[in-house]
Length: 235
Image 1 (tube, helix red, strand yellow):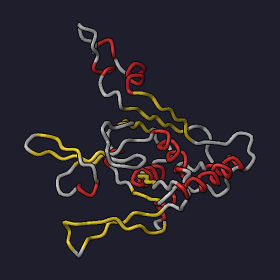
Image 2: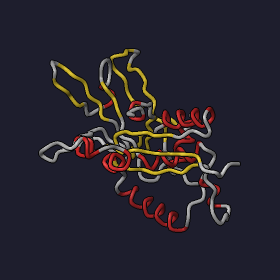
Image 3: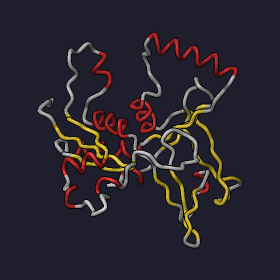
Image 4: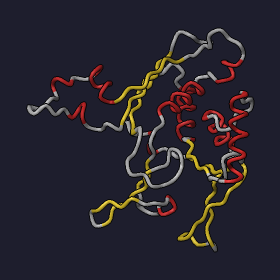
């Protein structure tokens, strides 16, 4: 419960709609810890590269439609270049790697925030960065401000979580391209809104108040549950 939002993420950057993604590194300015800046380098971290492949950011064999879309983006990017930023859940990938290696037949239940309100930091799956001062919460517009006691947490892309889970269990997109009639997965998975999960597995009738309010169903509408269990399809 609420583990995924605190796991490390890696930031990647592209100067326009078609240029290759690059890793974002943080370096000190003039050797001082109080000032840092971003530095962009080609993808070289194996974990970042692997996570970007799962997300589908670097398709090796694009379809004709994807090629036409890429060509159109190339024309647009020359006139209206638009920088892209994306936060990759590399910590989640590493966690699921470890879980599948240690407990390949595990049953997994995870719950977390599917989206976060008022996020001002740019990028796909960007975090909410906040700190408290004099009892008041201050949201930061820049993650570089997160020094000292700032709280950083990320929204969970549950469809991506599902992809990572299947990938770590041994199933990959390549299996779907080999002409197999029905790709074999070793996991059965489902994503539920928290209210739907509680209606199915909780006791909502016992938590309903006299005025009709039900905290089990009405609170935390920006959270979801992810359930993953092994199937009989084993190698």
